[in-house]
Length: 307
Length: 101
Image 1 (spheres, each protein chain N blue to C red):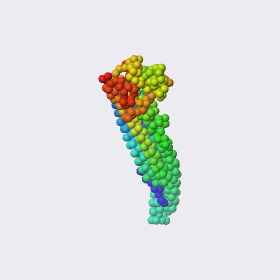
Image 2 (cartoon, rainbow over the protein chains, first blue to last red):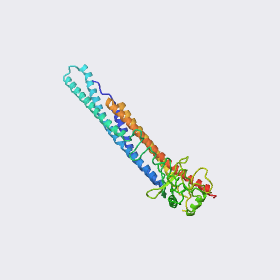
Image 3 (spheres, each protein chain N blue to C red):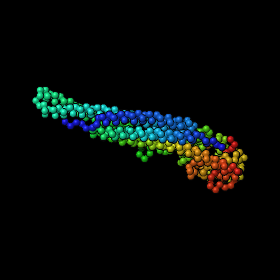
Image 4 (tube, rainbow over the protein chains, first blue to last red):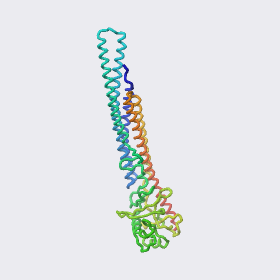
């Protein structure tokens, strides 16, 4: 009789290795969310970007933990299979040994009965092993599907984790700085949401809603002010604006040409600007340099009022 | 000056911490997938062997994806720190630029 092939000792050893990996995955899952939470707290990082980072880490951690269960199921199935494989190999080995002995001990009383018994045991063990193999294969396949489905890769949609939109760079470009009024710059590439002092936001908001009675493109309601504030057009306009918005020299942040502002439903000033070449700076001022000269770079400037 | 100087160093440190998690993920992946591949070789029965081979492939895909996500989180933290530092540098630069007005 041909014994079943396979290495039950190796299977049992590898099952232990798989169980240790499962334990590690479970532990890593918990550490993942905790780590990002601690980073947020240490950095005093708040806002939508920080929340998105936490959501992503939490989801990743949960899914990492989730990989441990199918690994354990596979290890358990393999242990059972390995035991049945070992039993079958031993039974067939015993039978084959008795067959060899028969040559020398032919005619011995009771020997045929013993042969029969060993033969039946071997046959039963092989049958059990085959059934065990079928069951193990089914269990392993089911667990493997669960393992593979943990991190889905939808076609043409990149990597997605539930609710986080990973792959879209959701939390890197639109972070905000904690602690002050928020100016969001959403959805326009690598941008930054810069928090400005409340007074500055108030002044900007007031200016953004100004109607100076002239349609010269200098206030948001003017024709040509496409979708929002474009800043005072002349040094005189800047001076006029400064009368109502006292300026501390040096408190300005550059915005790129094409920057638009609006006020959202909650009253927040929304500033939208294309990214700089380095994709970083976004600030606000009039369209002239603070010294009144033309800004040949085309940048717009706004000066913050006293804080 | 607008105060944009919050603890970007903590974000950078956190980015390294996440890379540590990514390393742990790689180790787990190696152990798990290595065990599954080894089991397939030792199984003997073709159905079990095929199932374990498939499990190894699924595991490799899952942990490779997780690896990418850890990298993205780490990049996100360090990238955010870069952006904040860049914004602060810009403000400082502009402040110097108009100081003589």
